[in-house]
Amino acid sequence: MFRRLLTPRWVGMVAALAVVVTACVLLGLWQLGVARDSGRLEAVAAASSLPRAPLQRVTAPHADFRAEFSNRPVSVTGTYAAGRSIVVVDRRLGGREGSWVVTPLETAGGTVAVLRGFVPGTPTSAPEPPAGVVTVTGTLGPTESPRDGTDLPAPQVRSIDLASLVNEWPGALYNVVVLASAESEGAAPGADLAPSGLTRVPPPELDAPLNLRNAAYAVQWWVFALFAIWMWWKMFRAEQPAGEPPAAPREGTDP
Image (cartoon, rainbow, N blue to C red; front, side, top):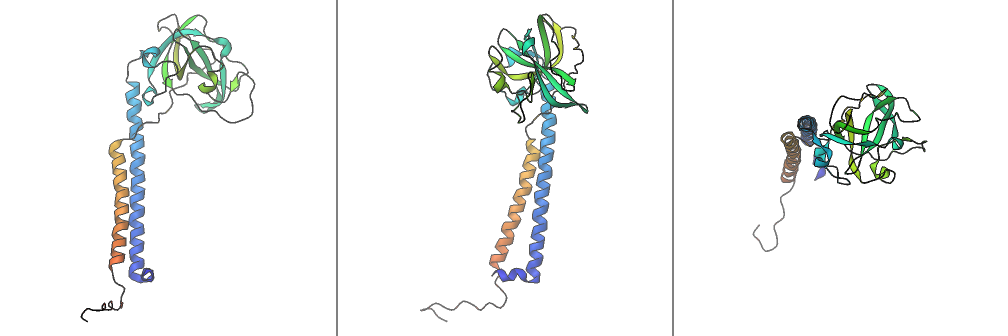
């Protein structure tokens, strides 16, 4: 039966099927890409439009990081534990190579990691944070996974791995990172205490949900591809090979 595939007619049918399936798959992937991009834009816009809220009203220590927390504007008040700052190496900002400076902020409800800014190079010590009570305004970001590599001298690390820092920083730890946009003295937002030598780190891109309409279009194209394969197979099975003799009559039936 499969020798028919070598005939000119069926070679053409196979080539046509390949073109149709390839086109449907590529169109589906294109629609999926559109769905991701438009979904990211929608999520960024939605997150940035939310009103700023105190951190303790948004989440609690040890609570899971939810998708809607990304880029959520927050404020938090506490005192920096300057001696526990870390320097996160191998970072880039605006084409520059350098490190992130992260300092734990001890609050009445728990401890939160504050990404205070970017510093060029790989310093062996973290710049000192403001002393006394400080109010930090910024946006939320998630923790990072551990990164492999050789051991680094303290306070240098390769990632903001809160699962590891929970054993090193005192108090209940919030499962978020606050990307500071301003630090001010006292218990209310005010003039930014511009950190010397530090550049604020902008919020990261979001892993946004898909745009459902374009995702549905992608699925439709892939369904069309499967339908084309099914129709081709149905035609192939239904067509009798040229010159095939009719089936012999069964015993006990009229010729």
